Length: 392
Picture 1: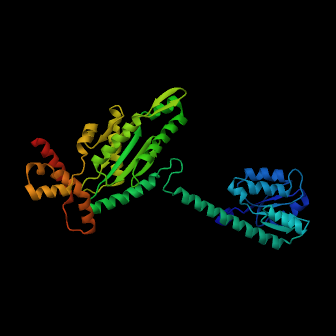
Picture 2: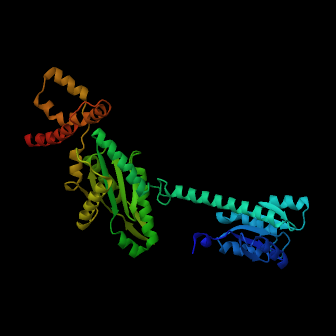
Picture 3: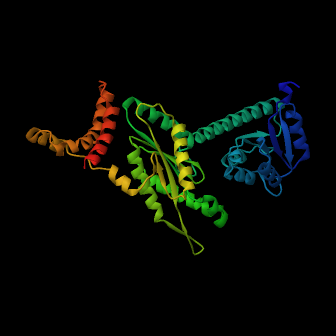
């Protein structure tokens, strides 16, 4: 069978209480249109509700049950876009100007007389159905554009596709600037048990609670998306593993204090977080970093949950406090260097001085590439702190 024979003709709904009028119209248009017919406005309305293939309506004005004006009011007032945008042609034997004006005011697309010739009727119907198809294609294009939106309409967070797209850009930029990017995957502990015990609607409330907290706790430059029910990913540019650990611990602590009540039963929410961060000099992808974070979540889940797992295993508050140091004053260090020289006390502060200066050095290297050994300096800051602890 050829493609032409498989094409579907546009479908028109004819509504008129006169069988002869309906038959006359059908005889004029049956070669170009597929036809459905009803005897009054109420029956026509019910057909519109159940038949999404109708592309145009031809209706009489004077009919029992529901006249043409009442039908137009229902069509134009419908909340269903495929109905309220339908072309509606009013066909009547009464060509009085006030009838035409009232029909147009009620929302009629066109107004024709029952004595109209078949050529003119076909021309008008073809133009109207073509317009309807164009409008429908436009609506579908808008819907497709909305589905490609970076924001998930349900969670209010970024979509997973946008997270991957944006994170890939951040990784590329970080590699050029020798900067850091971290990925955090967050999972609600025992989510399946929550669903089984309280029902899907309560589990969804817990899921939304986590979405809202993430939306308020993150920086503007961070991107968060819901990968699956009870599982979220956060991409944080300019954040190394130490910074990610500190934020993850704060987030987990915040959840430890949340208690939800359902039917007088208190529900505590706990989360497990897996962390991954870029490695200096290594080319890594978003999927790889998310995969690493997921593996660390699995180990945290196996250990009982309610944990933060980083590159070196479980993260504790003591570890975070040791890694987070206040920036030193470079001006004070320079003043001491001029007056006392490089003494033991000043030498101990060199790792902190490197940490303080690294963002500035990264900016200098990105704007004025000169081969600054940023990765070596970052390693020196870490190994220097270890040497300091050994010397102590």
